[in-house]
Length: 301
Image (cartoon, rainbow, N blue to C red; front, side):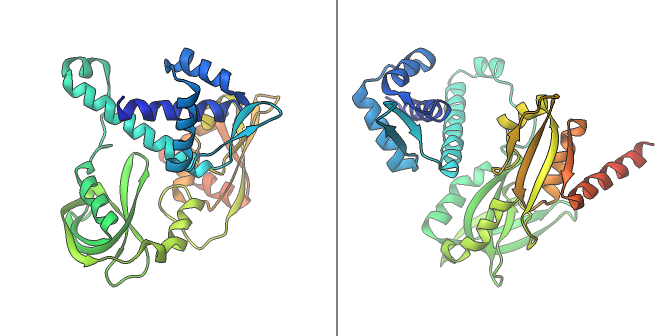
């Protein structure tokens, strides 16, 4: 059995238990067979359940009253696992497509963008991080058309808006920075130990409170938006931030709340939703969004 198939089965189990709290083992095995075409035994299910917990940190609890399984609250672990399984699915798709390119290009219509720009660096970046060695590279400045040499301690990779960034600490600095991997060239792993990721956890955790990559020392805000119920469906399927909470309304308009530090990227996400949302509070964020709308209006007026 291929690794791809095992991972798809694990993802299916996690999705079923998350979406159907207190689902019984019998119901789960039936859904796996009927909805996902996975015909497994109870013993195989127990093995998969143990793998989810030991390898991915996703634990399921058994309720003796309902005789069913529920997912323990761990959104970070689930999010990382689903992202990992998505990459594996893409890898399988491209691998199978490359074996039958005519069918692949006929059936799969990838977006015409630079989503995969820089992925040739992945192996070297991840290797440097795993062995805790410094990296040197040239970083291109798109605006100035120049390149600058850096020596950095690589900490991790972060995705935002279909682009990948290296989070690292440059030599001579003590603050983390992000480098778009599509701008990097001449990467070389150095035979020199890097700074330890553990020493920068507090800085890295600041990404949890923002959308995207730009964080500041500002306070976390309680944000409330009025949103059309149709838009809420899309927000539920593709949340802007992990703190997002959606509540449908009886008059076609509901409420969406966030708990984060509002930055430029968050404001841009709000503006993308157009007239389907309205910031209610805080007033400072409402004023910032309004200022952007006024500026755009003046350009087209």
